[in-house]
Length: 279
View 1 (cartoon, rainbow, N blue to C red):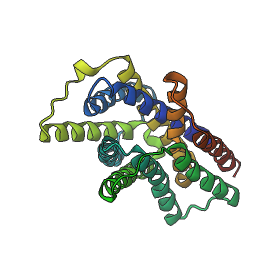
View 2 (view 1 turned 180 degrees about the vertical axis):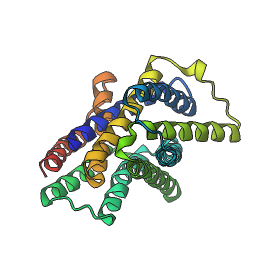
View 3 (view 1 turned 90 degrees about the horizontal axis):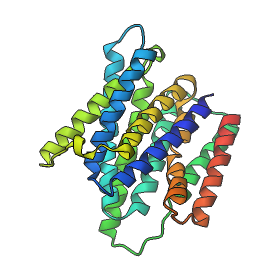
């Protein structure tokens, strides 16, 4: 069941990223991030009235806030990496690092996936590199390094989100996500103010941005469910396959080319998921 939740989380994350990318063609990326996260906050508070815990502890809120803060930092570096025009450098590094960081953490705290699951992990991480592969012209060393560093830091931030949110009590429901959204929104608003940028959510909100926010918080909730009943080392790897959903949506909706390399990556990801679930 954990693998199923992780797969659904991956799909939701990928769809949210796709819609966020579409919205960013019309609005600034920072405005899209803040507005979509505010939409997600409204949704998670409504979920709280249905799935809320009997007691709301400060510890779970703070673990969620820590997750939201490092996730927000990761998002900023991710967008900066993409803004350099070297998506082929930043995107695969961020996705692979997102999978790798919680995997290492899980092993450190004593998780021991089966041999079959390990084969699935190797296939899944390899598939990320294929799915996000993109040919780019030769770039100078300085530019390539900048894209790599941003992608690496973004992956650490996203992986940190997975780790911190997993520390919350299983009985806390979606309460930690309230902390996560509160911290991330405050952080991005503060950063925008420090950079002298105005963020006007009322002028950005539309169906695409709203759907992105809804899917993103849904993905958070599904990952939380996955990690509470399964191993973080496996749930994080499966969830990190979100680029596959983004690529497939771009192919279906925007008619973007699905190269043979990316198609092989998608098939490898499916095989990896199957082995992880079986293991």
